[in-house]
Length: 189
Image (tube, rainbow, N blue to C red; front, side, top):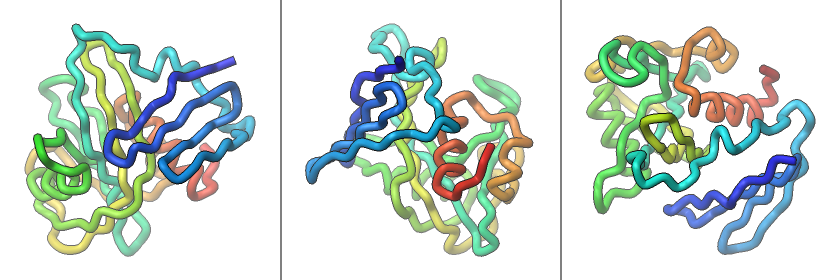
């Protein structure tokens, strides 16, 4: 049975715990327990949830799932040099001191892609540890408002459908974002 320690979003103070096939969500206003369908059978969380390791740097990152009017999602490809170079990702970046996640997402998207977005509802928060880095990804749905996306701090950008995401190589933590999107839209993967 997979049992996770509670993961708490520092901004919303919501937490979730996975126990076998039950997902327990809690907030200041109450809690709910959800039975996950077999198709969403959880990956052992020891491989995806962070164990506190002071020797691994921790970055808190705001991530945008940017939708256009054609119901396509904007993804970008990381530059080839550096960690995870050449992989595709949902755009975003590190939160600055005193900044909310929403402000972080808006700033990062403007800096990286040159567009203005509206930050919408929270999709998922992921705590993931790679061998070299621990990340907390707070992911929000966003709407493209104005501007033409440009690859200012990445190699390439593309508007893709939800179904097309599987054609692109993403960092491991992003697979949970894709799974959450598929779950919301009832798309099987």
